[in-house]
Image (cartoon, rainbow, N blue to C red; front, side):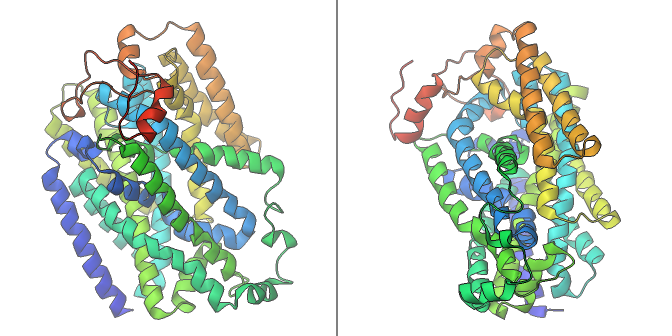
Amino acid sequence: MDYVLVGILIVYLAVVAYVGIWGMRKSKSLADYVVAGRRIPPLVLAFTLLATWFSGWAFVGNPGYMYAFGFPAMHWNLFLGIGIMLSITFFALPLRTSTERLGSLSIPDWIGDRYDSKIARGLTAILVIIILVISMVAQYKAIALLFEPFLGLTFQQTTVIFGLIVVFYACIGGLFAVVYTDFLQGALMLPIALAPILAFTMIGGTSGFMDSISGIVEPHYTSFTGGLNTPMYLLAIGLCFLVLHVSSVYNSVRFLFLKKEKGSFLKLLWLVLGLYCILWVAGFTGWFGKAVYPDLASADSIMPLMITTVFPRAAALLLTLTILAAVMSSSDSILMAMGTAFGRDLYQKCINPSAEERKVLLYTRIAVIILGIIPIIMLLWRTPQFLAIFMAMGTTGLATAILAPIILGVYWKRGTKMGTIASIIAGPTVYLFGIKIMGWAWPYAGVLAFFLAGLLYIVISLVTPPPSDEIIRLGYTGGGVEETGSPAKGSKPKTAVSHVEWKDVYIHLFEETPTPTY
């Protein structure tokens, strides 16, 4: 057991626990607990946004994927980065405005409010819970792989210990605790940029790398477009990753947190872009690791192995803490999304609308505990092979259901509840049929499901009665910005709101003093 690392972990977890208790004191209402009171500044939000995305799949799974398939696997990160920038530019502001008007506290909650449908809300919440439970399996695997060699514990013991720690502080603190621990953990994640530099240096640079892998890999391993990536595969995987950020409910819900102030979305955009450029290079550690460990049975173990056996001790300790921060920051966000889906979206909005807020908050916390323990049991029962693929497949399944209702919901006033329900049912059905029955690769199944679900949403919306004027007035933004103030605690919709056409979003984004025409 590495006692120095254990000491560092104790200090780190003590700080996290303190922030969790502070968050519990700050969370005086359900809105405080699940959307942090909608008053998070851009700098903090930028860190929590990327800390949530760059999780176990990014710092353990992504290096493992690059180790197995080479440089072509890096396309995932390129498309994902573009998708994050596009979602902030074209989607963050309309969603923030629409959810605040309707008093929505989560993505399933907003879908139910925007389309005035308990069925759509309930189906979305159930789907969110199922998919995010699967996603948590990947997070727990990443943290177990990382600390198993350091602590001298078994994979199972490490999974249980750290899984319960994550569940504890997500449960007590709510989104205030999650957001500010994400800020701390996001800052700790920045040194991950050192990992590929260290790996590249220690294998002897370009010549050492090429000499080491020559004869043990296929030519496409170092090619930008070879092997894994045919043009059709590139197109399919590119489309999937471009839209994942919008439909990842534990990420897109962060747009609801942002404090409204002049230039806030511009600040957020540039902060995220800069931080992303620093963090996305971590995958190259797995690529360079092929020169050190050419025949690993488990590709996902390459990052932990490089840290424990190749890097200097000081760097190893720093990078271990970095990956722990990444995994915990994503895990708490996923747990909060699952708890909110149960407590707010299913129990309060679908089962017991008259429930007291205190009771809803209690049930949300209980759901966080139960839904956080289930993935631990699943991981101990069966361990997935590739973290990155496992996460991407699950998130894509969720995206096939809700992508059209979310994006078109803020840009197209004609979308209806029946079109939304059809999309939510058809997307995952087609996706699973393509993977399980037809045997297609998940990107191909995902693209087909996106297309058919979106087509059904549009066609059925056009042939069914339109939403009421009240729903259009409150839920539809045209991609615009809000003219009036915020509802108290995000709990009640406004009675009179006007909007600016979507073209004026650019005025709001890129000028410090907006001058839209109403």
